[in-house]
Length: 111
Image 1: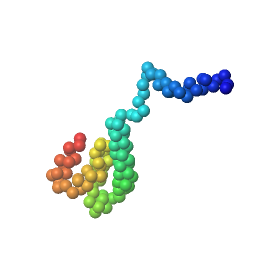
Image 2: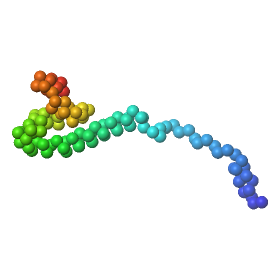
Image 3: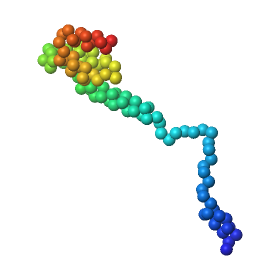
Image 4: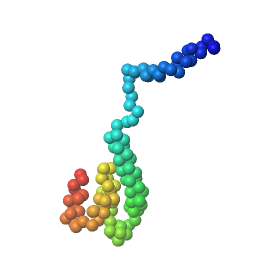
């Protein structure tokens, strides 16, 4: 038997000691509310970016062509200025299908 054999045996029998308690504790996971808010903001930003990629080229067309498609230049510019929390595509479609009285109400409500 070697000189260290009794030390090896005692180490095998003794349970692992608990890790020392630190003065500073850092959780392994960020708050779930923060993660959800970041995900929602990211998705809204990506949706708005895709909307801008598809709608900005419409502004290069003439007003008569836009009218044939059912849009007005001012409607498209209004939808591009909406806050990120609002879905610009839904708002533009709602404005497109609205009556003239309702159009002014919708456009003034987001100011």
